[in-house]
Length: 219
Image 1 (cartoon, rainbow, N blue to C red):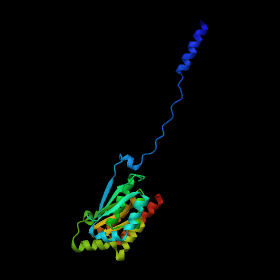
Image 2 (image 1 turned 45 degrees about the vertical axis):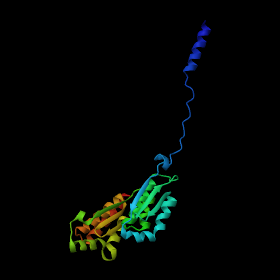
Image 3 (image 1 turned 60 degrees about the horizontal axis):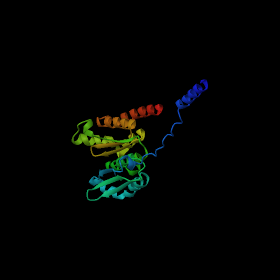
């Protein structure tokens, strides 16, 4: 009787022991076209009339990195006068489409291809735009002088701000576009706003030197 009881207790213990767990499933990472259920995604960038000729000249410089490196299809719609971008089956990342659209848009705003292409390479770059009237309402001669102060003689002031803040600036009539990282755009914008408000270039330079020295210490 005793022996049969022992057998039962042993068998019940073996039943309660957990068996080996199933292997963890391994899933392949989703491709860009699979994330959107296989749907092709589009982006369109309008071409302003004054950028049509420059676009023709540098078309291959824009086309090559977008098509070959970012794996995005690009074409120029001559009828609608806009650049059209779309994802492909072999596009490695869905964010490439937005990066390419930002790159083309930056060129349309007036940035050089070699500067705008940084938007494809780096993630933390942005383009910020504002108008002179957003800072101060100026008309006639006052507006012309403000634009002159921003550029300086032969573009000297603009280049000094660009080099000090590691940004790129485009002054298109009363619109100002700045390409750079978030912190650097802020410093460049503050300097440009001071010039618009009437500060002499020398005062802006000395303030820039102090700010950039502080930034260099921080990093």
